[in-house]
Image: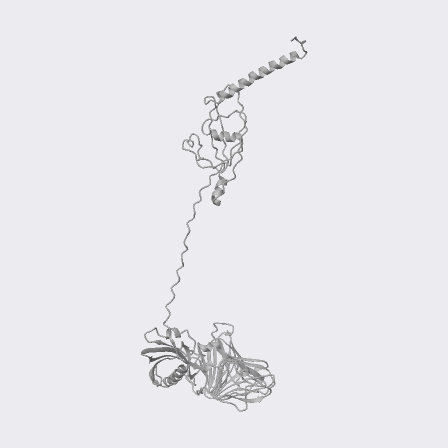
Length: 574
């Protein structure tokens, strides 16, 4: 083989070979340095400081309750190598990056051992994990003489350990203790309606006799159809001139070897308990354009008349001693229940009207708590609780004084009293002859608008109470707030005058008879409900008793008295 001629590129080849040799030497030197740096004695010492950051966010988490663990942080290859080298020396500082397989989701950090959490390595105040990321810092001179370039370390976000959730023990709800119900009285035995009616009539008759004899107690016995009833009656007289008389009744009997008992309370009715009570019928008078609100009683058959536009209206129960009612002037047709809207009870017995009265003062006024007048006198009531008087037909000033409580204004024999004004107080006006109403009589405190109205007025005459002529009362409506008693007659003077308005009596009207009122007045009578419990001072009472409370049951005599439950019961019906 022969030699070829020298190529011009020969020098270039040698220069490349020399350069490759130099580079190989450099690489060998770097490789030796890398091997040396992997030895424990050549790696720099690592010190780990956990710098606690602001705990405000952790505190907020603590106050807000359990917090879900934050998402796992993304870890690059250098962070993973540092984590693997802790807590001793790092063996990868300054090494080349190498490809690492994608890491699995990191687990929660392992708990720190006591040696790792010594005071020399952990700053004060960093005993608990911080909600902020901890900062890892490496410091120390390298043992290797080769310069080592350390890349900046990305802080590893610490994962706050999730506190174990303590399961809440289920709490068994406490069953509320039901309040102890009051012990109910033993069940009673209903008294049949026929037996109730028998006992009621028997006791009512006995009560009238007891009153007539002025006895406080009585013991009665009744034998009916082989069965004996024993009644004990105890009367409680009225405590004062406005109170009502009451009576307690206890009835005992035996049935099938058991001793049974029932008890009820009765009250004696005053005449003021009736919206209207009439003793005798005027043959020329019939009920026509009249409205009555409250109980009505008549001692005779009632006569009514109507036309196509007007008819009488009885809005509460009507009782009569007669067998029914008579029809007077009538145009068209009216049903009975259109007139007697509260019902009609016939043959209810007479209620006699007394002609004498027991007043605190005699007719001459001796010892009276009020004032007596021997001559016809005009009485004017004033809102301040006073009243004035002036003798009729005599010129002179009016005398005036405050009323006592209660007050009695009494006329002497043959004297009449004319009244009008505004009443403030409790007063009875009495005349043995006549009381003339010259104008409206109203209360300062209207009981229809004032629940505790304490004004009461009674007008009591042995003979007549009359409405003055039209020229005295003036035109228009006339209102009387009072309980009125006219033993002989209640009269409307000039009743045949042209229609003026309505005569309204709010309270009660009792009369021996009634005059006509039309056409001058249509009439309306409305019961004052306060009269169920009180009466105007000294107002007369009837001989009629009414059951106030009764549970209408028999109970064994050893049980609690039936009166305890009867106190709140209503009077029986039927």
